Length: 308
Length: 179
Image (tube, rainbow over all chains, first blue to last red):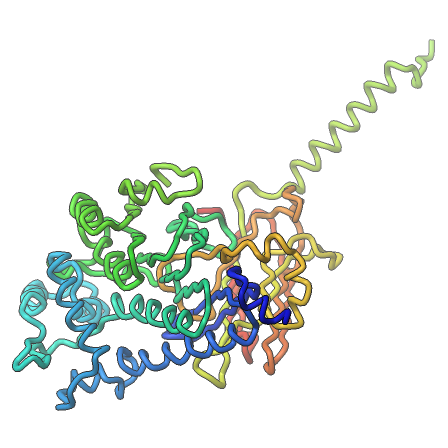
């Protein structure tokens, strides 16, 4: 009787929080609000299964992932998930005017090999990046470039979205998936998200600012953890002007891909694109200047400064 | 005529001079060097599986006598028994919103950074001298590890790396001027 009453109550009664390491090459934090403990366990299991399933499709580290088999020219029909990724990657390449490019990893590889590459070689690579990376003969994607493609700047957000949805379908009322800094929240109660400080990013130092997130995605991209690893595919040069970009959007995939693009684009383009898409953005430049659009400012919780 | 050394006025002056000397001496000889801070970077791995639950971790500072002066981090996971009384914080527990979280550039797994600014848990600057840096780690069904090393925190910067082994792959300490 009591149990029935509990289940009927609209307020969830059980809180669950777990942290994992070594998920998709980063850390995973998940939080759930459910009616019962059993429901939380079920939702967590479904969420982890969904991450595993999508890793098997999108990973560039496993040679047997569907993405890698497709790149190697396997003749199989591609799954709906890979189709989604390729279609959206194309769309975002257009929307960001080439600031997002799935073959940009080639630049990183070249600069790692030779810190000051030969200008001719760099120009050749730049042109290769501008050429169509794949086409659609008879509605099926076919790779055209010889460059290796990686979709981490879109796939990680997509995985956070899908994993959160899996937990929601398993009965969780409120879901938070934090995949190494890329977040997806599903639910109706806002939660506070701190944004790591790009110049003082120890785990026990105060954050740059904090925003309220509700039923949205949030992602941050920048140089703090891995140093200079971002390149402008349009100029074939390393990103130096922006040190960190944070985006709040309707889902984590959008936030993820925009956070990467906003590290590359000049501020007026960043602001215009964010405003047009109804997204919030915060950009920290290397000189310490902090730039935000109006939507992001309305979500901010803590007092903040224009320079850091 | 012999001066009365214990007049009220001389006692007052001498007492003040003594207090001032002690206070200045303390400030000069032992105060925490301005702007110096310790950065503790540590990395842990679980050798058996690709993904695993984050271990329980405590990082703190002890003074030369082995007394805890500052806790830098205490991270633990929820288990059904461990949070037995959490639901009894009824108003908070039933508030319906999730706990705060943090977003930043994609971080490598198991690698964290903490800083110590020379202050104790109450926020007071400690005198310079010898302190222990301690890190304790335990993983469910995994090993238990304790790292505890003594260093001199004075004006001289230092940088040391340790590979304790097992789950705790690396502990790197850098004591330098802030920023």
